[in-house]
Length: 124
Image (cartoon, rainbow, N blue to C red; front, side, top):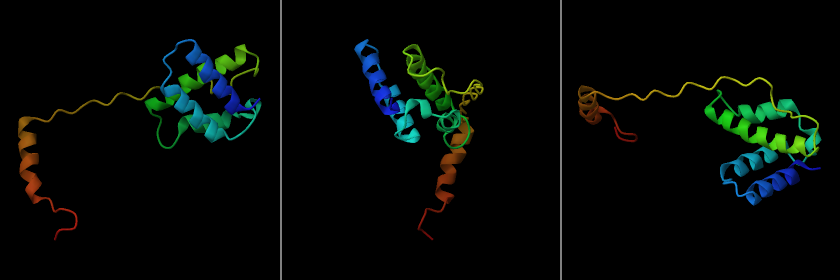
């Protein structure tokens, strides 16, 4: 069965259960676009890993995509559409949350004072 059809079925199932399902459909549809119009049994672990990784460093979005795909593949396994999930078995550590920097009053004053010394783009 086609991956896109199963994604549509899964989304309809979740919504029929009254689940507030707003972000996951977008992730699942992006996953379908990335995989192409293929049979669900043709999805390869390497292409799933590439979808999860995206471009650049691992971010917290990796974990959000993984969670959405994990629930989707659990749905497929219980209904015998597939025998096992192509998701990676090793999950990278979540990145540390960004620590906000709070400027001191003196730093703010220097920033404001410096704004007049910065050349604007296009001005000489």
